[in-house]
Length: 112
Length: 115
Image (cartoon, rainbow over all chains, first blue to last red; front, side, top):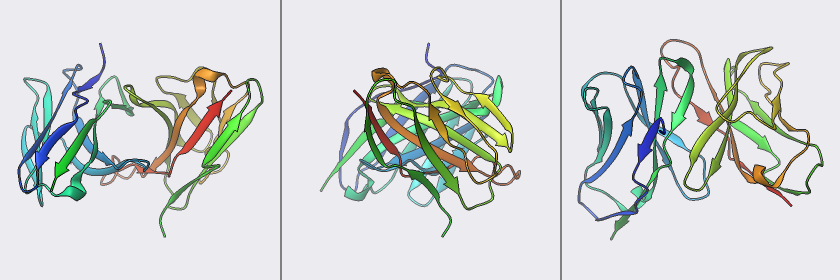
């Protein structure tokens, strides 16, 4: 079983819509969760981190964490074509807090 | 400018020919890490280092070596590359200060092809 699972997509949304990206993780004791954005041919960049149950908002981005159901999601409001990228979910587990586990990423296409 | 640099950016080599991919950061970060990225498998951690002379295995360390003799540098060594090590490699670094431990800064990537 993979530590982190994501739907590979592509997820297509029209410009201005809300994009919803989901991620599940296997280690119930995980406490640190991250969303990275990766443009084609580029390196990943951190856009959100979340540690507590509930929502965390940063501009058009909202991360949602539900530890009981072991999922973390990323909402992108007012999606723009420039948001088109692959979004990677990453988790740190208590088994080794120095290691990061990444999902395989969800490709998002925002259509003008 | 704060950055992580990797060299070379592209490399085509043959099976068994030793190679080194260099990684350097100018942010005085303690933590450095190497990942490989393959289609459908995402980013997988190869090795990481908590500080000078402190390294540990990630999830896919077989066939790789690393060293951390200086804080800013963390080279990845493939002693005898094989075709299954054809991949996109990323180096990353982060500070271990409590307020910023989890923000990893990634290098631009090295695309390696082993024939």
